[in-house]
Image (cartoon, rainbow, N blue to C red):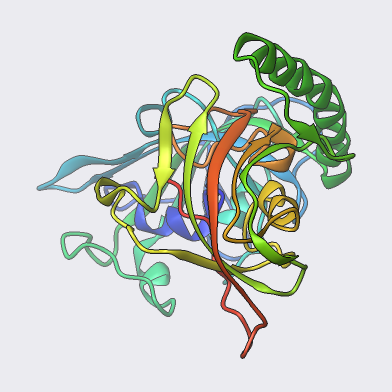
Length: 309
């Protein structure tokens, strides 16, 4: 599953432009031509490339004929800040350069030349954005965390969540009178129909049918329900990270023809990253899985990803 990440390239498509702006009015200019004015300045480290940042951004375009909002992270992200790792600037005057001037708590107005952006390969701006205008971002930096700090936080959260998930599963099994088996990793499973032949191994290609649910029984994905839009057997190479870890391990417990239930703690699923509105952060998931075929790979396997609605 592709995790939802807000790429910095997205910002180029949501530019806020005002009347052609002149230097002054409290604005400073970087060596690459970005104009910026820090409205609120807090002490603290500014982001380096790779640091995790959270920020709000509002965008609008305005000239003598048009005044329109193009982007509002408050509205688009349910008042939550966008979170992404700080990328290296892709060209001189990239907005990323200005983000790297801000520490947590800072707010700023950032202006860029539309003409300089138009020169960048692959960038397409709306026709109504005129040459000679400026591109303006209104930004509030919420947090800046180093890669080491992010890893430490995530490791601590994962360690705590592992115990929470196991208790949730134990309660679920008791309420539903289930007695599943458990692997050392914390994965639970029930084999409802034993298949034939050897169990699947890492590196082999599995073809399966599946239905995924949250523990409250809500279906979030299935390849056997046409309403989900992909009613075909799902094929992937086991143990190559093409699916969530719970699947990579769970399939190695099964043989061709097996039918099983997999109960996957959040750390072996999507952890605190929600891949869709149907799957909350830190969700424990269960899958009904039927193994249709197990084969040796005949060619380099594509990067299959478990589709989630």
